[in-house]
Amino acid sequence: MTDGHPRRRSWIDIRWRQFRHAPTPVWRAVAADATVAGIGGALLLAYDVALDHGAAFPGGDHQTLAAFVFVLLVVTVGSLATYLWVPLPSGAGGRRRRTAWSGMLGLFASLPVAYLALVLLLQVLRPLLG
Image (cartoon, rainbow, N blue to C red):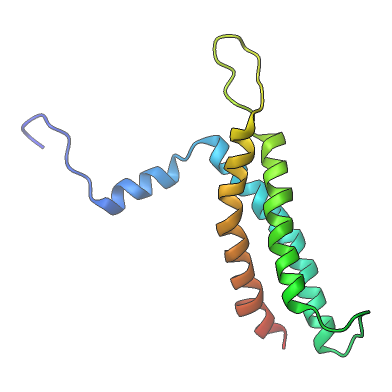
């Protein structure tokens, strides 16, 4: 602008900038949870496909239990991986340390990641596999 003030950004411009410049701990938390969800999701999808092709498992069909175990796996292992991978900033002492904050960051990132993984696996990929 000509009056020396920065231009006002729209809501979408602000959110896009926040997305592009997310803090490293947030990216690490999402990456850890997405990795766990990818591995667990491949196992869940293989189980679901095997059931459809007539595989017999002890105790019968436990698709709901398998989905619950998948979410529990993403939440616990994702939180633990985030705790181990995301230390607090070093600050003046130069010593990096971990606190419950790192694990909570993983927990808060794991819930939407698990939900999105279930939707992608069971509503998008599963129908494509027949």
